[in-house]
Length: 458
Image 1 (tube, helix red, strand yellow):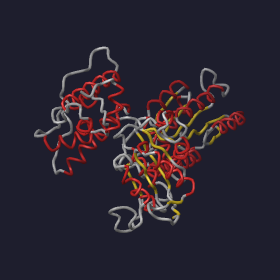
Image 2 (cartoon, helix red, strand yellow):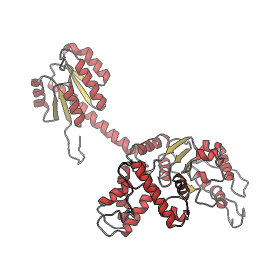
Image 3 (cartoon, helix red, strand yellow):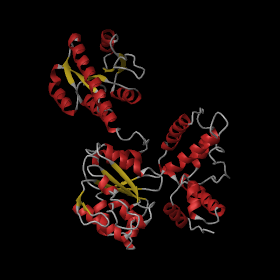
Protein backbone atom coordinates (compact mmCIF):
# COMPACT_ATOMS: atom_id res chain seq x y z
CA UNK A 1 0.00 0.00 0.00
CA UNK A 2 1.05 3.57 -0.65
CA UNK A 3 -0.33 6.78 0.76
CA UNK A 4 -0.98 9.88 -1.35
CA UNK A 5 2.48 11.24 -0.40
CA UNK A 6 4.16 8.11 -1.75
CA UNK A 7 5.18 6.66 1.64
CA UNK A 8 4.42 3.07 2.53
CA UNK A 9 1.14 2.75 4.38
CA UNK A 10 0.20 -0.27 6.46
CA UNK A 11 -3.12 -1.90 5.59
CA UNK A 12 -5.88 -1.33 8.12
CA UNK A 13 -7.23 -4.49 9.72
CA UNK A 14 -10.39 -4.72 11.82
CA UNK A 15 -10.60 -7.64 14.27
CA UNK A 16 -14.23 -8.42 15.18
CA UNK A 17 -14.12 -10.82 18.14
CA UNK A 18 -16.13 -10.84 21.38
CA UNK A 19 -13.39 -12.65 23.31
CA UNK A 20 -11.06 -9.91 24.59
CA UNK A 21 -8.19 -12.38 25.19
CA UNK A 22 -8.32 -13.50 21.56
CA UNK A 23 -8.37 -9.87 20.41
CA UNK A 24 -5.22 -9.18 22.44
CA UNK A 25 -3.48 -12.22 20.93
CA UNK A 26 -4.33 -10.95 17.46
CA UNK A 27 -3.07 -7.51 18.37
CA UNK A 28 0.19 -8.91 19.67
CA UNK A 29 0.74 -11.07 16.59
CA UNK A 30 -0.32 -8.63 13.84
CA UNK A 31 0.25 -5.06 15.03
CA UNK A 32 3.72 -4.87 13.45
CA UNK A 33 2.28 -5.40 9.95
CA UNK A 34 -1.20 -3.86 10.20
CA UNK A 35 -2.93 -0.79 11.57
CA UNK A 36 -5.30 -2.62 13.92
CA UNK A 37 -8.88 -1.72 14.89
CA UNK A 38 -10.99 -3.74 17.34
CA UNK A 39 -14.70 -4.44 17.79
CA UNK A 40 -16.51 -6.81 20.13
CA UNK A 41 -19.94 -6.87 18.48
CA UNK A 42 -21.73 -6.18 15.22
CA UNK A 43 -22.78 -2.58 15.98
CA UNK A 44 -19.30 -1.39 16.92
CA UNK A 45 -17.82 -3.20 13.89
CA UNK A 46 -20.22 -1.39 11.54
CA UNK A 47 -19.33 1.94 13.17
CA UNK A 48 -15.63 1.27 12.55
CA UNK A 49 -16.27 0.50 8.88
CA UNK A 50 -18.39 3.61 8.43
CA UNK A 51 -15.86 5.90 10.07
CA UNK A 52 -12.55 4.56 8.76
CA UNK A 53 -10.89 3.45 5.54
CA UNK A 54 -10.62 -0.28 6.12
CA UNK A 55 -9.02 -2.85 3.87
CA UNK A 56 -9.26 -6.13 5.77
CA UNK A 57 -11.52 -7.72 8.41
CA UNK A 58 -11.17 -10.81 10.60
CA UNK A 59 -14.73 -11.68 11.63
CA UNK A 60 -15.83 -14.16 14.28
CA UNK A 61 -19.17 -15.60 13.20
CA UNK A 62 -20.26 -16.18 16.81
CA UNK A 63 -21.05 -12.67 18.07
CA UNK A 64 -23.24 -11.44 20.94
CA UNK A 65 -26.06 -11.46 21.81
CA UNK A 66 -26.07 -15.04 20.41
CA UNK A 67 -22.44 -16.18 20.30
CA UNK A 68 -23.51 -19.82 20.07
CA UNK A 69 -24.81 -19.46 16.48
CA UNK A 70 -23.75 -17.60 13.33
CA UNK A 71 -26.81 -15.36 12.92
CA UNK A 72 -25.19 -12.17 14.17
CA UNK A 73 -21.92 -12.82 12.35
CA UNK A 74 -23.63 -13.41 9.00
CA UNK A 75 -25.69 -10.27 9.51
CA UNK A 76 -22.50 -8.32 10.25
CA UNK A 77 -20.89 -9.69 7.07
CA UNK A 78 -23.83 -8.61 4.90
CA UNK A 79 -23.86 -5.11 6.40
CA UNK A 80 -20.09 -4.71 6.00
CA UNK A 81 -20.15 -5.66 2.34
CA UNK A 82 -23.15 -3.44 1.69
CA UNK A 83 -21.05 -0.50 2.96
CA UNK A 84 -17.83 -1.48 1.20
CA UNK A 85 -18.00 -4.24 -1.40
CA UNK A 86 -14.20 -4.22 -1.74
CA UNK A 87 -13.57 -5.34 1.88
CA UNK A 88 -11.73 -8.62 2.27
CA UNK A 89 -13.45 -10.41 5.16
CA UNK A 90 -11.75 -13.49 6.63
CA UNK A 91 -13.99 -15.59 8.87
CA UNK A 92 -12.97 -17.21 12.13
CA UNK A 93 -15.25 -20.21 12.72
CA UNK A 94 -15.69 -23.10 15.09
CA UNK A 95 -15.51 -26.71 13.92
CA UNK A 96 -19.30 -26.93 13.77
CA UNK A 97 -19.70 -23.76 11.68
CA UNK A 98 -18.42 -25.06 8.34
CA UNK A 99 -21.87 -24.88 6.69
CA UNK A 100 -22.25 -21.28 7.89
CA UNK A 101 -18.75 -20.47 6.62
CA UNK A 102 -19.62 -21.76 3.15
CA UNK A 103 -22.78 -19.66 3.19
CA UNK A 104 -20.65 -16.65 4.14
CA UNK A 105 -18.36 -17.31 1.16
CA UNK A 106 -21.45 -17.21 -1.06
CA UNK A 107 -22.34 -13.84 0.51
CA UNK A 108 -18.93 -12.45 -0.43
CA UNK A 109 -16.46 -13.37 2.32
CA UNK A 110 -12.86 -13.73 1.13
CA UNK A 111 -11.88 -16.89 3.09
CA UNK A 112 -12.45 -18.72 6.38
CA UNK A 113 -10.21 -20.32 9.01
CA UNK A 114 -11.26 -22.74 11.70
CA UNK A 115 -10.51 -22.09 15.36
CA UNK A 116 -8.08 -22.35 16.97
CA UNK A 117 -6.49 -20.19 14.29
CA UNK A 118 -2.89 -20.90 13.37
CA UNK A 119 -1.17 -17.52 13.22
CA UNK A 120 1.26 -18.48 10.46
CA UNK A 121 -1.66 -19.56 8.24
CA UNK A 122 -3.60 -16.39 9.13
CA UNK A 123 -0.64 -14.21 8.16
CA UNK A 124 -0.39 -15.87 4.75
CA UNK A 125 -4.14 -15.44 4.11
CA UNK A 126 -4.01 -11.78 5.22
CA UNK A 127 -1.00 -11.09 2.99
CA UNK A 128 -2.79 -12.54 -0.03
CA UNK A 129 -5.93 -10.53 0.74
CA UNK A 130 -3.86 -7.38 1.19
CA UNK A 131 -2.12 -7.93 -2.14
CA UNK A 132 -5.49 -8.40 -3.81
CA UNK A 133 -6.77 -5.12 -2.32
CA UNK A 134 -3.71 -3.36 -3.70
CA UNK A 135 -4.14 -4.86 -7.17
CA UNK A 136 -7.83 -4.00 -7.28
CA UNK A 137 -7.09 -0.39 -6.35
CA UNK A 138 -4.39 -0.13 -9.02
CA UNK A 139 -6.76 -1.56 -11.65
CA UNK A 140 -9.52 0.83 -10.59
CA UNK A 141 -7.14 3.79 -10.81
CA UNK A 142 -6.04 2.71 -14.29
CA UNK A 143 -9.67 2.36 -15.41
CA UNK A 144 -10.52 5.80 -14.05
CA UNK A 145 -7.48 7.27 -15.79
CA UNK A 146 -8.52 5.59 -19.05
CA UNK A 147 -12.10 6.78 -18.63
CA UNK A 148 -10.94 10.36 -18.18
CA UNK A 149 -9.09 10.43 -21.51
CA UNK A 150 -10.74 12.98 -23.74
CA UNK A 151 -12.19 14.86 -20.74
CA UNK A 152 -9.06 16.93 -20.09
CA UNK A 153 -10.78 20.21 -20.94
CA UNK A 154 -13.99 19.33 -19.10
CA UNK A 155 -14.25 19.59 -15.35
CA UNK A 156 -17.17 18.18 -13.47
CA UNK A 157 -17.85 16.11 -10.39
CA UNK A 158 -21.54 17.05 -10.19
CA UNK A 159 -24.06 14.25 -10.90
CA UNK A 160 -25.29 15.87 -14.16
CA UNK A 161 -21.75 16.05 -15.56
CA UNK A 162 -20.88 12.54 -14.40
CA UNK A 163 -23.94 11.36 -16.34
CA UNK A 164 -22.61 13.19 -19.42
CA UNK A 165 -19.20 11.53 -19.03
CA UNK A 166 -20.78 8.10 -18.61
CA UNK A 167 -22.86 8.53 -21.78
CA UNK A 168 -19.73 9.58 -23.70
CA UNK A 169 -17.93 6.43 -22.54
CA UNK A 170 -20.84 4.23 -23.61
CA UNK A 171 -21.35 5.61 -27.13
CA UNK A 172 -17.88 6.84 -28.14
CA UNK A 173 -16.78 3.56 -29.72
CA UNK A 174 -19.82 3.20 -31.97
CA UNK A 175 -20.56 5.14 -35.14
CA UNK A 176 -24.08 6.15 -34.18
CA UNK A 177 -25.16 9.77 -34.56
CA UNK A 178 -25.30 11.79 -31.35
CA UNK A 179 -27.23 15.00 -30.70
CA UNK A 180 -25.78 17.23 -27.96
CA UNK A 181 -28.35 19.64 -26.56
CA UNK A 182 -27.85 22.51 -24.15
CA UNK A 183 -27.70 26.25 -23.73
CA UNK A 184 -25.12 28.35 -25.52
CA UNK A 185 -21.72 28.27 -23.85
CA UNK A 186 -22.17 24.98 -21.96
CA UNK A 187 -19.37 23.18 -23.82
CA UNK A 188 -21.20 21.16 -26.45
CA UNK A 189 -18.21 21.18 -28.80
CA UNK A 190 -15.95 19.87 -26.02
CA UNK A 191 -18.31 16.92 -25.63
CA UNK A 192 -18.21 16.28 -29.38
CA UNK A 193 -14.40 16.38 -29.29
CA UNK A 194 -14.37 13.92 -26.38
CA UNK A 195 -16.59 11.54 -28.38
CA UNK A 196 -14.14 11.82 -31.28
CA UNK A 197 -10.98 11.34 -29.19
CA UNK A 198 -12.37 8.22 -27.50
CA UNK A 199 -13.55 6.66 -30.75
CA UNK A 200 -11.81 4.47 -33.32
CA UNK A 201 -11.73 7.58 -35.53
CA UNK A 202 -9.42 9.47 -33.18
CA UNK A 203 -6.60 9.45 -35.74
CA UNK A 204 -8.88 11.03 -38.34
CA UNK A 205 -9.91 14.67 -38.62
CA UNK A 206 -12.38 16.37 -36.30
CA UNK A 207 -14.18 18.92 -38.46
CA UNK A 208 -16.44 21.43 -36.71
CA UNK A 209 -18.75 23.86 -38.46
CA UNK A 210 -21.16 26.34 -36.90
CA UNK A 211 -24.29 26.27 -39.04
CA UNK A 212 -25.59 29.48 -37.45
CA UNK A 213 -22.44 31.53 -38.03
CA UNK A 214 -22.21 31.19 -41.83
CA UNK A 215 -24.63 32.98 -44.21
CA UNK A 216 -27.07 30.58 -45.84
CA UNK A 217 -25.79 31.52 -49.31
CA UNK A 218 -22.30 30.27 -48.38
CA UNK A 219 -23.17 27.37 -46.10
CA UNK A 220 -23.98 24.87 -48.86
CA UNK A 221 -20.58 25.39 -50.47
CA UNK A 222 -18.91 25.26 -47.03
CA UNK A 223 -20.53 21.92 -46.25
CA UNK A 224 -20.48 20.18 -49.64
CA UNK A 225 -17.69 21.98 -51.50
CA UNK A 226 -17.90 23.32 -55.07
CA UNK A 227 -16.50 22.84 -58.53
CA UNK A 228 -14.59 25.50 -60.42
CA UNK A 229 -17.00 27.97 -62.02
CA UNK A 230 -19.99 26.75 -60.00
CA UNK A 231 -20.79 30.37 -59.09
CA UNK A 232 -19.23 33.81 -59.25
CA UNK A 233 -15.97 33.71 -57.34
CA UNK A 234 -15.53 29.93 -57.56
CA UNK A 235 -12.11 30.11 -59.20
CA UNK A 236 -11.05 26.60 -58.24
CA UNK A 237 -12.45 23.30 -57.03
CA UNK A 238 -12.85 23.23 -53.25
CA UNK A 239 -13.56 20.33 -50.91
CA UNK A 240 -16.33 20.91 -48.39
CA UNK A 241 -16.23 20.26 -44.66
CA UNK A 242 -18.14 16.99 -44.99
CA UNK A 243 -15.54 15.66 -47.43
CA UNK A 244 -12.72 16.88 -45.16
CA UNK A 245 -14.15 14.71 -42.36
CA UNK A 246 -13.64 11.47 -44.34
CA UNK A 247 -12.50 8.72 -41.93
CA UNK A 248 -13.04 11.17 -39.06
CA UNK A 249 -15.84 13.05 -37.32
CA UNK A 250 -18.07 15.87 -38.58
CA UNK A 251 -19.53 18.13 -35.89
CA UNK A 252 -22.47 20.32 -36.92
CA UNK A 253 -23.09 22.97 -34.27
CA UNK A 254 -26.37 24.92 -34.15
CA UNK A 255 -27.94 22.33 -36.45
CA UNK A 256 -31.36 23.94 -35.93
CA UNK A 257 -30.25 26.93 -38.04
CA UNK A 258 -30.05 24.87 -41.26
CA UNK A 259 -32.41 25.98 -44.03
CA UNK A 260 -35.02 23.48 -45.30
CA UNK A 261 -33.05 22.98 -48.54
CA UNK A 262 -29.82 22.14 -46.70
CA UNK A 263 -31.72 19.87 -44.32
CA UNK A 264 -32.75 17.80 -47.37
CA UNK A 265 -29.18 17.60 -48.68
CA UNK A 266 -27.82 16.64 -45.25
CA UNK A 267 -30.49 13.95 -44.88
CA UNK A 268 -29.46 12.44 -48.21
CA UNK A 269 -25.86 12.30 -47.07
CA UNK A 270 -26.81 10.63 -43.78
CA UNK A 271 -28.85 8.03 -45.67
CA UNK A 272 -26.45 7.27 -48.53
CA UNK A 273 -23.07 8.59 -47.31
CA UNK A 274 -22.72 10.26 -50.71
CA UNK A 275 -22.33 13.95 -51.49
CA UNK A 276 -22.25 16.07 -54.60
CA UNK A 277 -20.26 19.29 -54.76
CA UNK A 278 -22.08 22.47 -55.79
CA UNK A 279 -21.89 22.61 -59.58
CA UNK A 280 -20.65 19.03 -59.80
CA UNK A 281 -22.12 15.77 -61.07
CA UNK A 282 -19.81 13.24 -59.44
CA UNK A 283 -21.14 11.37 -56.40
CA UNK A 284 -18.43 11.25 -53.74
CA UNK A 285 -18.50 8.64 -50.98
CA UNK A 286 -17.67 9.98 -47.52
CA UNK A 287 -17.13 7.85 -44.42
CA UNK A 288 -17.64 10.24 -41.51
CA UNK A 289 -19.37 10.01 -38.17
CA UNK A 290 -21.83 12.87 -37.73
CA UNK A 291 -22.35 14.60 -34.39
CA UNK A 292 -24.71 17.55 -34.03
CA UNK A 293 -25.52 20.11 -31.37
CA UNK A 294 -28.22 22.68 -30.76
CA UNK A 295 -29.43 25.15 -28.16
CA UNK A 296 -32.79 25.21 -29.91
CA UNK A 297 -35.91 23.33 -28.84
CA UNK A 298 -35.99 20.99 -31.84
CA UNK A 299 -39.27 19.43 -30.70
CA UNK A 300 -40.87 22.85 -31.01
CA UNK A 301 -39.15 23.39 -34.37
CA UNK A 302 -40.60 20.04 -35.53
CA UNK A 303 -44.10 21.05 -34.47
CA UNK A 304 -43.75 24.37 -36.28
CA UNK A 305 -42.42 22.72 -39.44
CA UNK A 306 -39.01 24.42 -39.24
CA UNK A 307 -37.06 21.19 -38.88
CA UNK A 308 -37.54 17.91 -40.72
CA UNK A 309 -38.73 14.99 -38.60
CA UNK A 310 -36.78 12.42 -40.65
CA UNK A 311 -33.54 14.42 -40.25
CA UNK A 312 -34.18 14.81 -36.53
CA UNK A 313 -34.41 11.06 -36.01
CA UNK A 314 -31.33 10.45 -38.19
CA UNK A 315 -29.29 12.82 -36.01
CA UNK A 316 -30.84 11.89 -32.70
CA UNK A 317 -29.94 8.22 -32.19
CA UNK A 318 -28.57 9.21 -28.77
CA UNK A 319 -29.10 12.54 -27.01
CA UNK A 320 -26.62 14.02 -24.53
CA UNK A 321 -28.20 16.85 -22.53
CA UNK A 322 -25.57 19.29 -21.19
CA UNK A 323 -26.52 20.98 -17.89
CA UNK A 324 -26.30 24.77 -17.64
CA UNK A 325 -23.58 26.09 -15.35
CA UNK A 326 -26.13 27.27 -12.76
CA UNK A 327 -27.24 23.64 -12.24
CA UNK A 328 -23.77 22.17 -11.72
CA UNK A 329 -23.36 22.90 -8.01
CA UNK A 330 -19.78 22.84 -6.71
CA UNK A 331 -18.44 22.49 -10.27
CA UNK A 332 -18.91 26.25 -10.65
CA UNK A 333 -16.18 27.33 -8.21
CA UNK A 334 -13.86 24.46 -9.20
CA UNK A 335 -14.16 25.52 -12.83
CA UNK A 336 -13.69 29.20 -11.96
CA UNK A 337 -10.49 28.48 -10.01
CA UNK A 338 -9.12 26.30 -12.82
CA UNK A 339 -9.88 28.95 -15.44
CA UNK A 340 -8.24 31.63 -13.31
CA UNK A 341 -5.06 29.55 -12.97
CA UNK A 342 -4.90 28.86 -16.70
CA UNK A 343 -5.72 32.40 -17.87
CA UNK A 344 -3.41 34.05 -15.33
CA UNK A 345 -0.53 31.73 -16.29
CA UNK A 346 -1.03 32.58 -19.96
CA UNK A 347 -1.00 36.30 -19.11
CA UNK A 348 2.08 35.75 -16.87
CA UNK A 349 0.27 37.09 -13.82
CA UNK A 350 -0.12 35.66 -10.33
CA UNK A 351 -3.26 35.81 -8.22
CA UNK A 352 -4.14 34.32 -4.87
CA UNK A 353 -7.50 33.14 -6.12
CA UNK A 354 -10.81 34.97 -5.76
CA UNK A 355 -11.70 37.35 -2.96
CA UNK A 356 -14.57 36.47 -0.63
CA UNK A 357 -16.95 38.89 -2.33
CA UNK A 358 -15.99 37.47 -5.75
CA UNK A 359 -16.81 33.91 -4.60
CA UNK A 360 -20.19 35.02 -3.27
CA UNK A 361 -20.93 36.90 -6.50
CA UNK A 362 -19.88 33.96 -8.68
CA UNK A 363 -22.13 31.57 -6.76
CA UNK A 364 -25.13 33.92 -6.78
CA UNK A 365 -24.91 34.98 -10.42
CA UNK A 366 -27.13 33.12 -12.91
CA UNK A 367 -24.50 32.74 -15.68
CA UNK A 368 -26.81 32.99 -18.70
CA UNK A 369 -23.75 32.59 -20.96
CA UNK A 370 -22.58 29.53 -18.99
CA UNK A 371 -18.92 28.46 -19.15
CA UNK A 372 -18.16 30.76 -22.09
CA UNK A 373 -19.34 33.78 -20.10
CA UNK A 374 -17.39 32.65 -17.02
CA UNK A 375 -14.23 32.37 -19.10
CA UNK A 376 -14.82 35.77 -20.72
CA UNK A 377 -15.32 37.51 -17.38
CA UNK A 378 -12.24 35.91 -15.83
CA UNK A 379 -10.15 36.79 -18.89
CA UNK A 380 -11.26 40.42 -18.60
CA UNK A 381 -10.66 40.43 -14.84
CA UNK A 382 -7.10 39.09 -15.25
CA UNK A 383 -6.39 41.88 -17.72
CA UNK A 384 -7.82 44.60 -15.46
CA UNK A 385 -7.28 43.48 -11.85
CA UNK A 386 -4.67 45.31 -9.74
CA UNK A 387 -4.86 43.46 -6.41
CA UNK A 388 -3.54 40.11 -5.27
CA UNK A 389 -6.98 38.53 -5.65
CA UNK A 390 -9.69 38.86 -8.26
CA UNK A 391 -12.67 40.76 -6.84
CA UNK A 392 -16.35 40.92 -7.75
CA UNK A 393 -15.68 44.37 -9.20
CA UNK A 394 -12.95 42.93 -11.44
CA UNK A 395 -15.48 40.40 -12.69
CA UNK A 396 -18.12 43.14 -13.09
CA UNK A 397 -20.37 41.18 -10.75
CA UNK A 398 -20.70 43.93 -8.14
CA UNK A 399 -24.16 45.12 -9.19
CA UNK A 400 -27.13 45.67 -6.86
CA UNK A 401 -28.01 42.81 -4.51
CA UNK A 402 -30.94 40.84 -5.89
CA UNK A 403 -31.05 37.90 -3.49
CA UNK A 404 -33.73 38.24 -0.83
CA UNK A 405 -34.43 36.27 2.32
CA UNK A 406 -36.87 33.48 1.53
CA UNK A 407 -35.82 33.11 -2.11
CA UNK A 408 -34.78 29.75 -3.41
CA UNK A 409 -31.35 29.76 -5.03
CA UNK A 410 -32.88 29.04 -8.47
CA UNK A 411 -35.38 31.90 -8.10
CA UNK A 412 -32.64 34.29 -6.99
CA UNK A 413 -30.52 33.37 -9.98
CA UNK A 414 -33.45 33.83 -12.35
CA UNK A 415 -34.08 37.29 -10.87
CA UNK A 416 -30.42 38.17 -11.39
CA UNK A 417 -30.47 36.84 -14.94
CA UNK A 418 -33.63 38.74 -15.87
CA UNK A 419 -32.35 42.00 -14.41
CA UNK A 420 -28.99 41.70 -16.15
CA UNK A 421 -30.58 41.03 -19.54
CA UNK A 422 -33.01 43.92 -19.01
CA UNK A 423 -30.20 46.36 -18.15
CA UNK A 424 -28.04 45.19 -21.06
CA UNK A 425 -30.89 45.62 -23.54
CA UNK A 426 -31.47 49.10 -22.20
CA UNK A 427 -27.76 49.90 -22.51
CA UNK A 428 -27.64 48.66 -26.13
CA UNK A 429 -31.00 50.30 -26.97
CA UNK A 430 -32.51 46.94 -27.85
CA UNK A 431 -29.68 45.83 -30.16
CA UNK A 432 -29.80 42.06 -29.66
CA UNK A 433 -26.50 41.42 -31.42
CA UNK A 434 -24.60 43.86 -29.19
CA UNK A 435 -26.42 42.69 -26.06
CA UNK A 436 -25.62 39.02 -26.84
CA UNK A 437 -21.96 39.94 -27.31
CA UNK A 438 -21.79 41.77 -23.97
CA UNK A 439 -23.55 38.92 -22.16
CA UNK A 440 -21.34 36.28 -23.78
CA UNK A 441 -24.23 34.33 -25.31
CA UNK A 442 -25.36 33.61 -28.87
CA UNK A 443 -28.18 35.57 -30.47
CA UNK A 444 -30.55 32.56 -30.52
CA UNK A 445 -29.94 32.01 -26.78
CA UNK A 446 -30.62 35.68 -26.00
CA UNK A 447 -33.84 35.56 -28.04
CA UNK A 448 -34.92 32.52 -25.98
CA UNK A 449 -34.12 34.32 -22.71
CA UNK A 450 -35.98 37.46 -23.84
CA UNK A 451 -39.00 35.29 -24.57
CA UNK A 452 -38.67 33.35 -21.29
CA UNK A 453 -38.66 36.50 -19.18
CA UNK A 454 -41.18 38.40 -21.38
CA UNK A 455 -38.74 41.25 -21.90
CA UNK A 456 -39.02 44.01 -24.46
CA UNK A 457 -36.12 44.92 -26.68
CA UNK A 458 -36.67 48.66 -26.33
